[in-house]
Length: 332
Image (cartoon, rainbow, N blue to C red; front, side, top):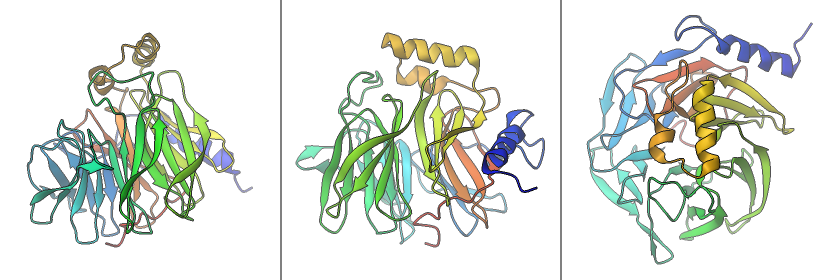
């Protein structure tokens, strides 16, 4: 008898629930070694992986195990976006903020330091879409390590052939964002709003008609976001080390729950008390995972999921029952 969709996802979650890393073909596997703050990961059709590196550049992981850091700069790369010419756009979480370009030869230049006459503070994420547009997420106007837990001052900036402009604001700590396969909708995680939101993308690029797709609680703070080929949205929760899939019908499925109960409770209590800060959230660990923050689908069939993290020195991968949505940079 053919398995139902729900049974397939329950089986996937069961395979990932217990056991040490690298213990089985169905489980979790370490990828890479001696990485430094590999917060964001991108996969490529060549089999290469690209990860952000706290030393100021991007580290490439080859299928044969080789690793190479592009350069060392004063930037603190968070989100990264591969470009057609082999360069990378870097969302700089360091004090200088902005989006920067690292050329294939390592030369680093400012790419977007202001928008609509205002300087850009720390930038959390940057991504391309299939139409050639670049989207950048600014989490809040206050870029300090004491999170603005109660204020919604985040925004999304669009850069396209028309120019650079804010296309959505009033977001409650904007994190990763993704454009749907048909190009009609923008999905975005609002970390301290504890929700996955969706906007309609107008012809002008403005983001309209925000709606809540899923909400989170109990120590969950939505951070990483990617989409799959069946219309599902995958949300990685920083701190709790939980990964969810939000199906196209809105059903929320737990794929990985590696939370340490006491740690998740401490994060939740600090959030409610208004004291949660970057240091506490960044230091959280799971039983096996080192504070996962992002997810990218790769491999020949786009069914290998690779997770970036804040506190580990490697990526972690697992096999998914469904392929990821082909990223814009897949064949670049």
